[in-house]
Amino acid sequence: MNWFWIAIIGYFLSGLVLVLDKFILTKSVGKPIVYAFYSTIFMLAVFLAAPFGASLLHGLDWLWAVVSGFGFGFGLWFMFIAVKKGEASHINPFLGGIITILVFLLSNYFLQEK
Image (cartoon, rainbow, N blue to C red; front, side):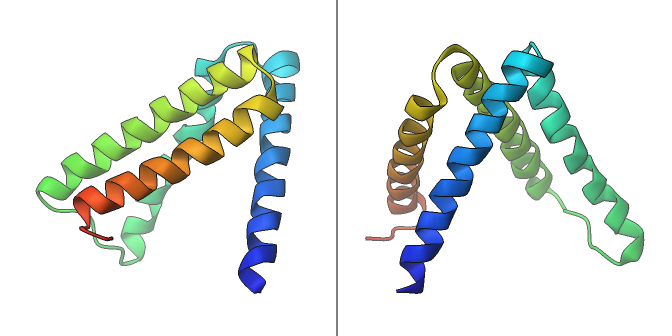
């Protein structure tokens, strides 16, 4: 039954984050692209772990890492545009539903999970 409480807490925190995003986009940062940039630029700090023994990627793994990074950045940008234009109470359930459906479909296709 722990999964139930974890899901409830997860959706509560997701809703809280979207309400805070709406507040930030309307009061503090006016442009969603700026907010998306500053939300993702800190991910470059992962390269600071290289001197401590973390192995770097090789070959085609770099391509997948860059593509997924850009995909994440553009996804945040489009989400922030939707949050700025619409209501957070409408965007959050839509995102929760569409992400669940897409993960299910992509796992069926790529991982052959049924």
